[in-house]
Length: 242
Image 1 (tube, rainbow, N blue to C red):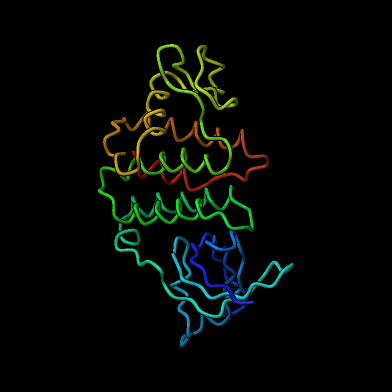
Image 2: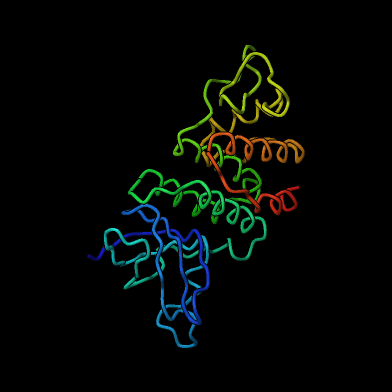
C-alpha cells in the first residue's frame, strides 16, 4: 500500500555503501523508519542532501503492516530552508529540537496536531528574527511537553512563585533545589507557557537564566519520560546561546 504524506527527518544514518536509514515523523503515520537505497551514489536519483535531519519532505512511501522498515517510492522537498543551514544559532537550536523529538516521540500513529506543531516550529525557526532565536528552544520544550502529556500546570503568581519539576506545577513552597525552579526563573517559565511563538522575542532573559532554565527543563523531561535517553545537543546550545 502506498501512502502520500509530509514528513520531517528526525534521524539519518548510513547503511551499506550507498543507502540511508531515516527516522521520519510523518503526518499520516506518525514516526516511521525508512530505508532509502542508492542515495549516496554519485548519480543518485534522490540526493542524500534531501535526507539531512530537519528536512521537511513530501513522500510517497510503502506502508506494509507489521513491518518496521519500509521503503520510499518518491521524495521531494516540502519546504526548503533559507537560513537554518547557514546560521550557526538557528542550526544549533534546530539540532537540539530534532534530538529532543527523537528521544521523546515514539508513537507510530498519526497525530496531526503534533505534526503541525513540529512543522510550524521548524519553519518558524528558519524565518524568525535573530532576537527570537535565543528563546526558541525554551518555548519549544515547554510546548512540546503538552503533546507528551506533562505540560506545566498551574500559574505563576505571588502565592505560587516556584515550580516543582517532579509534580509539574507552580507551587507555594520551594521544594529541594534540585527538584525546583526558583522565583525569577519560574516567572520567565510562565511567560514561555503563555506566550505565542511570534512573541517570544519580547521575553527578556539573561544568558545565565536562559542556561539555568534549559538545564531545569531537561531535568523536567527526564522526570516525566521514563528511561529517556541522555540529550547531547543542549551542551552545544549552551555555548552558542551565551
